[in-house]
Amino acid sequence: MKGFIVGNGVTNWDYDTTPAFVKMGFWHGLYDYDLKLNIEANNCNFGNFNPDPLSDNCANYFNRFNELTQNINVYDVFRKCYTNG
Image (cartoon, rainbow, N blue to C red; front, side, top):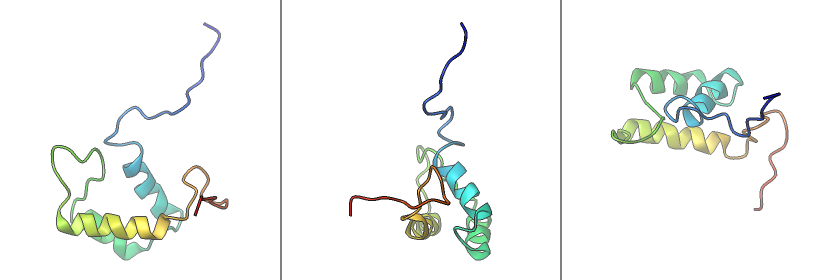
């Protein structure tokens, strides 16, 4: 084998995808310190939502995060996000 290409490097739904975007989002200034502290204080796990559903607080924090990042290009947070809307 000379090489291979990885199209989508997700290997663990509990750490990659949403949890990684939430953590990365803070360090790129996509949401504020208060929201970060609330997420951490409530031990919110935004990984694979099964078997434990999100608490009401965590669901609210996740909704707030989604509101703040809905127009963000998740593949390049510094570029414009093109939508169909």
